[in-house]
Structures are given as structure tokens and as C-alpha cells.
Length: 410
Image (cartoon, rainbow, N blue to C red):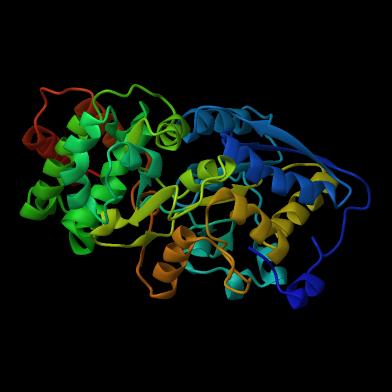
């Protein structure tokens, strides 16, 4: 990605640096190779203002990191900033008055005019006040394909889920596990809640369940097809035992596995491995069946601090995260899309371009986290990982239990 000369000259890293150097501890869960390279772009930009980024990375993903972050905040030892996903995860912290109001920053920087889609800023807004800085658009809705694995099997990479299913036997014969899936609940549940359901059951059915909390839709034929497809996916993952999502992605890089259902952050790992999109790996938005871009992603929140200098630095950092240069440098490494529509993205690879096309065409949906509460997400995670790891559990059994959770969801 690159910026036009006009944009570079028009935007400094930040409107003004702090009067004196400030250290800010920033907590996040970006620890894989691609993620670490991306967050380094933020740290370097902050250092360029004369301040210091104290990296508070927590390994294990969001499910591990979020409780640690919340514990620090409510325990009176908050970091200066922390990463959450777009959505409802910070509602209770905001209600308790523990997070900094960024409305003045957002108005001064014109965030309402530049954040695209507007739903990302809506996710930061409570009672008309803005409490977070969105930094990217990440979408779950992808299946990634391994060029090395399909080369082993003597096949072209498939163009949709049905073609992938047809290729599974040849992959097995070549010693390749058809589908890579990590061992964490968020991976197993996310692949169903955000990919199988939207692509197989369809947009209308998915919104009926996630937005309207309609349990009858869960028991309908559209969701039945999605549960059956997910059961097939479970069988195709047998033979590969990995825990973290990036380990599953690495199985595609090495040719151990043929495909992975994972968000576009997987592109960061392919980039670190110097693999070329469309050649060394393939990408199928919406499993190649029904392509939508979920406008989820990441945002930074800033706990309230009694030190006026820290507060000023927090607001400076918030503004910096959305500047054009920083948006491009971070997202080009992360594999995500910038939240600004006014940057030059003409040099992106073909997979990123597919995401941009979906965004431009309005083929977007909110992320699950924007529609259902953290408690409901936890229940669905527990259920779907139980199903994934219990071969005797049938698609019909998990379908009924899923409907029960949705019936009482908030």
C-alpha cells in the first residue's frame, strides 16, 4: 500500500506532540509473527512523536487477554490503552465510568467523516459519546487455500466450498489434512458463527439469528444445512493437532493442510512467509458461496487517568492511530483494511482487493460481537467447541442447544 504525496504532506503523525516525552503502556493480544510486525508500525509512529510505547502484549488471543486487561482496570492499575474488538465488549467498563471519553478528539479529527463504514464508529459510541478509536476492518469470512498442499495432490486450488469438499479425498491420499483448525474455542465457534452460517445459511437467516435472536430460524432448513456443513468440516480436520490459529495457518504454508477457515488476519502470516496471493495461497471470501465482508476489527480504548499529562498523551495517541500514514503502514502489514476511505490502496494484493471490492459494493455485515453480548458469545463458544471435539455429538443435537442459547440471548 502507498499514500499519495498530497496525503503525506497533509498529515503529520499527530497534530502536536506532548510537551514532554510520555510513556504509555499499550495492552493487546497481537503476538504472532504477522501481528507483531503490524503492531510495531504503531509503536514506531508513536516513538516518532518523541514518546515511548511500552508494549503490553498478552499471548493466547482475546479470550486470554481480555480478562487480564479488565482485571488491571478494575483493580486500579490500568494500562494507558488497550485493544478490544469492535462491539459490545467494553459496555460495562464504560457504564462504570472507567474509560476516557474521546468525543473531543473524534470531533477535532473529523472521525465522523472519515470512518468507513460508519458502523465502526457507532460501535465506539454510547449515549452519543465516543469511547474508542477504531483502527481496522477485519473480517472472519474467508477460507484460505494452500498452494503447496494442492500441488502435492496434483490439483488446482478450488473456487468454492463444494470444490474443496470434492478435493478432500485427493488431499488425504497425498498425505495432507484437508482442513486446519486450531484448538481454541473462539476459532471453532467463529468458523461457524461467522462463516458457515453466513455462507451456507445466508445473510437473511444469519441476521434473523444474530440480530433478531430468532431461535426458530436456528431450527429452520437454512441453519440445518449450515450445521451439516460444519459437521463435515469437523471430519476433514482429523489428522492435524495444533492449538493457535497461526499454527493452523503455518500448516497451509508448509503444505501440511489444504485449507483454513479464518479471518483476513491470516494474510499477515502469509506475508511474513513471503508467499504471493493467488499463487502460493488462495482466498475464498464467503467460502466462494456467498461473499460478505463483516466489518469487525479492532479498536483501542483508554482508561481514565488522574494524570493530566497522561490523559493528553492518550488523546494524542488516539488521534495518531487514525492518521492516513499510520492507517496504511499498520493495515498493509496486518492484512486488514484501513477504516479510512481516503488512502491510496492501489498496490494491494488480489485477496485484499477482493475485500475492498466487497466493501465498495456494500456487501457488508456487522461482526457477531456487534450484535450479541459477550456472555452469549461465551455460551456459543463453549457449545461449538464441545461439538467440534465430540465426534459422537450430532449436528441435530448441537442445533437444538444452539437454538436454546439464542432464545435467551441478549
